[in-house]
Amino acid sequence: MRRPGPLSDFTLTPRVGVIVAWAIPIGALGAGAAWLLLSLIGLITNAVFGGRFSTATVNPGTLGAPWWLVLGAPVVGGLVVGVMARYGSEKIRGHGMPEALEAILFRRSIVEPKVAVLKPTSAAVSIGTGGPFGAEGPIIMTGGALGSLVAQRLTLSDDERKALMVAGAAAGMAATFDAPLASVLLAVELLLFEWRPRSFLPVTAAVVVATLLRVPLLGSGPIFGVDTAGWRIAVPAELLSVGIGVLGGLLAVAVTALVYRSEDAFELLRGRLHWMWWPAIGGLVIGIGGLIVPRALGVGYDVIGDLLSGHAALSLIVGILVVKSLIWGLSLGSGTSGGVLAPTFMIGAALGAFAGLVLPPVGPGFWALVGLAATVGGVMRSPLTGVVFSLELTHAWSALLPLLIASATAYGVSVLLLKRSVLTEKIARRGGHLSREYEVDPHSTRFVDEVMAPVPGDDTDGSGRLRLRVDDDGRLRGLVRRSGEVVDDPVTLGPDDTLLDARHRLLTAGVTAAPVVGKDGELLGTATLAELLGQPAGAGASRTRLSAAGMT
Image 1 (spheres, helix red, strand yellow):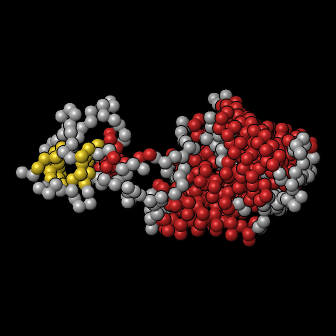
Image 2 (cartoon, helix red, strand yellow; image 1 turned 45 degrees about the vertical axis):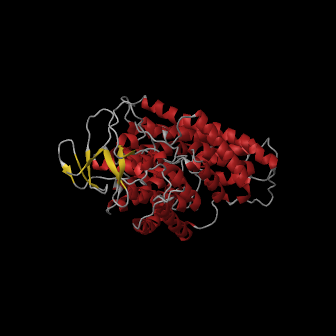
């Protein structure tokens, strides 16, 4: 017989509406932060490398700066970031996503106010002086900080504060890339650690608001529009996408290892050279790379566009694949400020474009797009986000199946060969632990009457017995503790309570056993915490039952 129990697929409370309402202004703040960060990056880039006042996004390598400026600007930028981190907040170091994860998992989604200012400023300095990083990591931390700051002013639970923090982070991503669905997926796959209405609805509300505000702030349309009219996607191309996925997964493993080998190398300097100076050394690496491949500097949206349109020359493809990967991985390990997503886009697209030189032609930019999706799936360990991001960035909807094949394959290779991703390795090195494998707790699908002992119960060793007091009709009236204390209103469980809910109730009340009572007050049985946890009789502890005693 089907149980008409109290379970539902999801739980939704009226408070979720309050959180959604607060997510709307947070979405606006996230969009504003994205506009401000991109404008600041453009302003610094134009001022440093072009000697002009402009907020337009531009590649430093296209401005014709002299060699000494290309070499020296990243060093100065790294020094400024190091000073800001030492005397402002050390939390601005790194690419932003691990820091956001740490705040969610270990600091109750609480972010200091100064981080909301220092993180985008340091990222703008780092990228604007030639750093080969993306704006997405800093905007995730900045948007998340804004959401956290708003939540801290309200009387909210930790879970509600997390929802608003992630709403701000996703809003910043949506406004930066005009990719609303990918931003929601990124929140689910990377930040929320749950799939529940209480967090999904606020995040979606913030993302929608940020995407709408992006139009007047940053414009609309795909960031890297691709002309798919001449593409001829057939089964051979889809099968070959598996190979691109394998290459993308191997590349993901290589660049992740590079980042943390670089971090290990810089750690060897600890005690000899303060970490404040490390980003300047990373800047020197960037400057040398800029002399070799000038267009490897900066965010490089123009390079990604050339790769995805099929207009990139072989020298640029190889240069990005080799030099961009090296200077990004080596400098990121120095603790500077900058994101990983845009560089991943670029080197992934370069990988696909390089492989496309020997693969059957499908259309301009097709293999570059497949390589981009594969590398994102492997580096970020977020295969669905990799697919949807690629589609929303380009509007190449006809490539859905090849992208899914490549991203999932790269994800599998990355998981098989690497214990942790570029996002979670840093958390593990700081002593934290997280799992990216989500599953249903089996205790949420089993019920108390499956494990309870029916009245009158039994006692395997006679120790610690609690006596239940019932009336002549078998209804619970109270219990007597071992101390002799009479409890007239004891903690009780229902037969249709899930083991998860029952366990939580006992732990909250600080008791290890409780009577099970039907809806009419009839005593049905007893359940202990050990049984609710699934511990069998004799498994390391005695199994003590509650026994029934008549009223005197």
